[in-house]
Length: 212
Image (tube, rainbow, N blue to C red; front, side, top):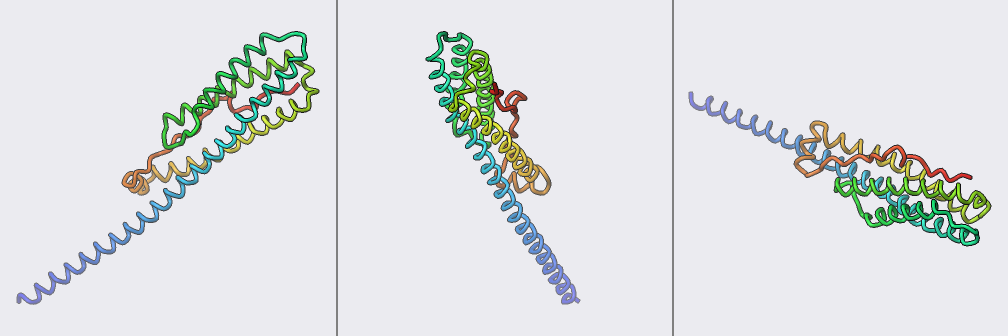
């Protein structure tokens, strides 16, 4: 009488063990898949952000050249316009602030926000400067070097907007993986946090209006 009972208990144990092993295998496979997906999505975010920073750096490299071109042209004028001088001072301040905040990453939300705010301020200050120059020196449009720099800066602003768009898409994909079930379980376990989305003000979305 005891032998059938023992056989039944033994069979039950094997069934339970098999179920546990299958569940563990499924969880392990799902965990590996979720982890690899999160790593890939996070890498896409970092790559997209790096491309945004490349364009921001290009803008930082071009602005001083344009300012020097204007200063060289103004040296031949009989009058120095206060509006241009004042706008240049504001641009210089914004430029230095933006230049000092290099290295921000989406992994540090506070630094990321400060960096983007400084770049937005630089864009506004540059708009003020070029508009002051346009009004003060209408003949500057004949300067080939100035025109070339103007076109490069406008192209850079357009590329910044494009790369920001790619970054926004990459963050959206990544954050969905982090927040959706069951990925959110593995994201929490492995330490994957949501990334901050890029939000620039409306003025920073537009390329500087430097046409004459």
